[in-house]
Length: 337
Length: 237
Image 1: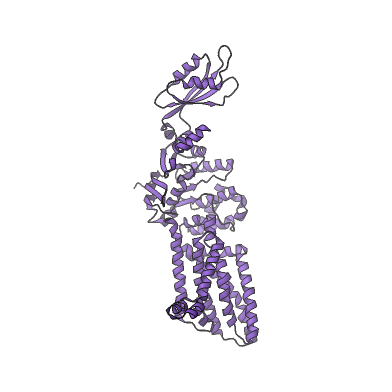
Image 2 (image 1 turned 180 degrees about the vertical axis):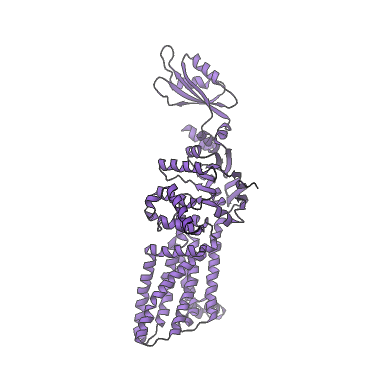
């Protein structure tokens, strides 16, 4: 196994009686990658993370962290990872200082100057200074989340596994934290599960989308850099904005939609909010293999309207995520809404 | 410091970071003290034997269920067990650490009851051997009881259920001797064999029978192993 291979999973499966939570997941993560683990609720993100951190065992398949099998050598794995579970569960009766000290003891961090330096670093990075001596029971959700992050970073692990780490942070704290993750990701490995696509776009070099579409067990639906996932969806979007005709008549949204829908290769058309009252805007979805910009232009010109904007672009990650993770019934409901 | 002791230290301190440790100790001392001195004046002799009559009942009904009920239930309910278990620590070290911390808490309670023999010792001559043996018996009883309570705390997230299960099982094991006497025969012998009361009584009279010590230690080890298996079972479920 290559030395920079931090995580290796093959055919990872977790079953609870008849229910399949994770279904034959295989992926590798290398040193220096910041991986966004995206998926809807119940898709198996947390289950996969719990297997990787040796909290639960897989029913089938292989999972190795730093080359150590999570089932055979759990202690070696746990020594090398920093883990923050969902909702940062902490002991409320302890102060932040006592809690970090307790974690330092369990992680066998040398006492004295080394320990002090490690604590000072996480206090600084996670912004714990103002409530360092307070009992955890008196902290806000966001502050607790930061303490949870602190314990995960305390031993300076080369692999961080974070389950929705930004759930309780305010927008400023989120941005600071994600910037920090992006920075440390240069020589460490981070797996970050989240529902928030913009966080993945901001901080992650790679995205893993896990889906339990149509009630099946969680499977990897997409894996790669964000641009590659967007390109791999097979569709493109055209942003079209039309202005008034020579007679000064502005098309209605329905008229524009009908005109664009008639273009060969336009699979769907939806109205968009126009930037001002002098334009009507729509988005056309078409195949990635064809370029229908000329046809769209001709359709606008044919109606005598003024073409104000025409842009071809890859679909946003959010649309790809919906495409990959929404079951057919939910997709129909979403479309109807 | 090894992981077991680190877990034990945190667990022991947590008893005094909430009212639970103080409440259990205060109520036990009040209750047992009241019964002890009532019997003491009736007997009218310098002995602390009544202490070893009432402490086991207090342990059975209240002390052990109350101090063990939250050990795993609370950690499971709040999710802290996930962070603890994913630290570089073995499941058995977590179980042993919690057991030692709780035994230490009982040790504090027993140490405070030493005021009774010290007080009685001023009124008359006390034989130290039955006292030492009685305290050893109480520790043995507490050890087995804590292991049982630890197990029931690991099977449920509900502290009340853990309390009830522990109290019922401890009461059954303590008083099964009465049933043994009633049914007689082989079944009666079996009941007498497992009875905590039957095995505890000689300690109060100053007799340390190794068979009874081994019995209590065996119950302790058995339930600690069962708790460890129960904790590990999260992996397979």
